[in-house]
Structures are given as structure tokens and as C-alpha cells.
Length: 212
Figure 1 (spheres, rainbow, N blue to C red):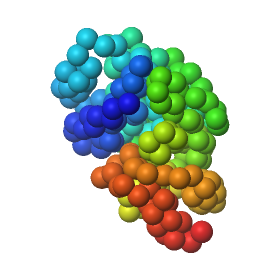
Figure 2: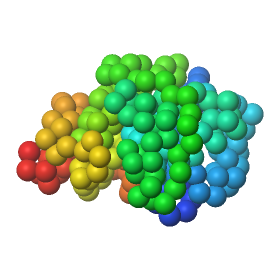
Figure 3: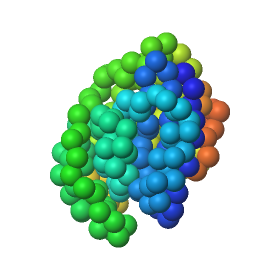
Figure 4: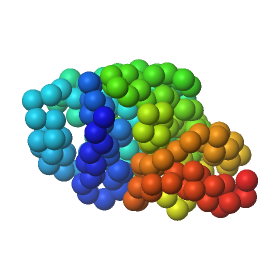
């Protein structure tokens, strides 16, 4: 499994990670600003391979705005946590915060993911971990082989996601961080900011910030 950083282009973008194994997965899709440049970078990285899946860690516009166009371009399946998937599929402007960002989410087909689902990449298997708090349907993806965690906006290297938007909950976020604390996390690949090689340290710091 190889992990490539596909930097989101434009304001209000998220981190985007392209995970390449026997299948290929894009973790989050950014806002979709300057989409053609993003598509070109993904094509250069994949060479002649197909982008099999786009997994969205949660429903906010800065992570999902580019999803439909990327899926249309590459023929990819779009997946998201069960609590957020219907709002992404409908392009709900409030729930996805698209209106707040000044953008638009177009309706798309979304497969719902639940706790324990496995995204099989061959030698590596990304396990879905439900982590509500930033949004109701927020998820992380954990690889037990490399101990990598793709954390979306649940936890960053030095902080956590906000809980004051629709479906956010401080109590849920604290419980999600406690769940992540039980994992053996190596590298943390967050939704914003830099990566960190000691993911458990980031989780512990997030719990301190949240008073948990």
C-alpha cells in the first residue's frame, strides 16, 4: 500500500490522500475548486489505473465538493458513513455546510459505510471506525498492518474538529476520541494540517483539549 498526498487546490480545501494497493481509494475529495488540476495530478499518480473508490470521512463541503465530478471522471464508487451519506447523496446545502462555504454539492450516488466495514486493498484492509462528533456520520479508516489512521476532521496533529455545526456534538467527539485511544496508531493522516507519526499522541492531546 502506498499513500500519496493530493493537495487540495483553492480556498477551504481539505487534505486528500490517494491510497494505492490492489485497488485504489481516494480519501476525501476536497471542495472541487480548480478540479481539472486535481484530476491531472490524480491521473499522473495512477498512470493507467482506475480510481476504484472515493471514501468521504464526513459530509462537509470542503471534503466532498469535488466528489461527484471525480467519480464521473474516473468511474469511482462514492462511500460515506451511514449518518452523513443521505445528506451527501441529496446535496443538502445546510447539512453539508455548502451554503456556509459559498459552494454547491450536486446529488450523487453514495454507498453507506458502518462500523467494522472493510475496504479491501489486497495486502492492506482499511477498517471503518465510526467517530461521530464533528458530524453525526463521521468516520475514520484504520489499517492494522501499517497502523495508519485516516482521521478526517475527528482529530488533527494538534487539535480536533469543531462541534458547533449541524449534527456536531462535543460529547460524541469525546467518546470517539476515547475509542481511538484504544487503537495502536502509527501515522495519523488528518483532514487538515500536517501528518504526525505518533497518532496516539494526537488523540491524547485532543482529549485534553476537549476536557475528556
